[in-house]
Amino acid sequence: MNDSSWRSLSAMLGVACVVLIIAAGALLATSGESSPTPSQPTGSVAGDIPSSSASIGSSGSSGSPAPSPSATASALPVATPTGTPVAKASIAHVTFNNLQLDASTDPKGKARTFTFITDGSGPVGIAIVKSSPAKATTRICAQLDGGKPDCRTGTAVNYKGALTDTAHSVWVITLIGPASVGPTVDIAFSWPTSHAQITLTHGRFQGSSSPGIPQALNGFTATFKTVAAGNLTVSAAWTVITTNVEVTTEDLNAPTATMIDQKQLTSVTSLGTPGYAFGVGAGKSYRVSLRNLSADSQRPDLTAVISVP
Image 1 (cartoon, rainbow, N blue to C red):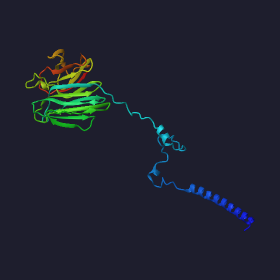
Image 2 (cartoon, rainbow, N blue to C red; image 1 turned 135 degrees about the vertical axis):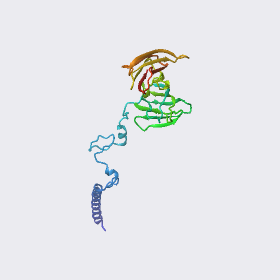
Image 3 (cartoon, one colour; image 1 turned 90 degrees about the vertical axis):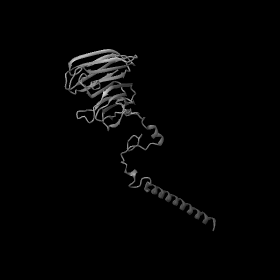
Image 4 (cartoon, helix red, strand yellow; image 1 turned 45 degrees about the horizontal axis):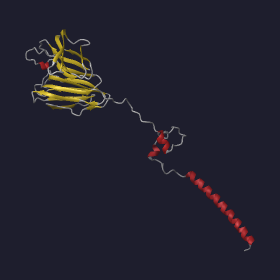
């Protein structure tokens, strides 16, 4: 083959190569446009997410490109609390002494009921610290915010480990004697609060001068320790009778209790409005009592609200 023939054959081969390259490029372009996306097969969970859902950190616009991982992380919102943080409040301490309970077998008997509200977080103390007779048992139930009551029976029941971690909670405690005769108890309470107030309902207010009526069924005696200086206040009302009453406050900060205030009211059905008040010091222990001074044969139902600073 002469030189002229080689030159003609080389030119033809060069043209053929160019044509093949152009055709191959066209085929690759067409193949890329029609390939399915393997990560999103039809009917998959990912495919069921509505198209309007926007990723956290994206603009939410359907036309916006998906952000890179680093952009997504930097765009996350700063976590903020959903409500006001629960603060810690001072702990109130109130003990009701020498309180006789009704018996559950008594057709007219009622459970002594105590109600208080906790503020903020902290421990809650509920304990029978003394019982008479020594082996007499009490059925006590503690209910929080209207939930299921936690009921226990014993001579020295203690809800050890109880606590609150909410801004405000309502605690309701009931006590009754499960036997034919109700025991006499000391019941101690402590709870975190910004305003220490406890309410006694279904107390007995039967005059102890009546034959056979013990003082333990006549009103209440409560000891307490103050957090700040301020007024001890008592409001109270009772059913059935109009009677003479007495409220006393004693200082317990010396070896012997000292009477520091006494107030009597005649022919009343309540302590009136605003009720009894007496100024007390900070960080000290006191005892307040309410008594029916008259003899009666009925069973007055007492409601009393005690507030301590």
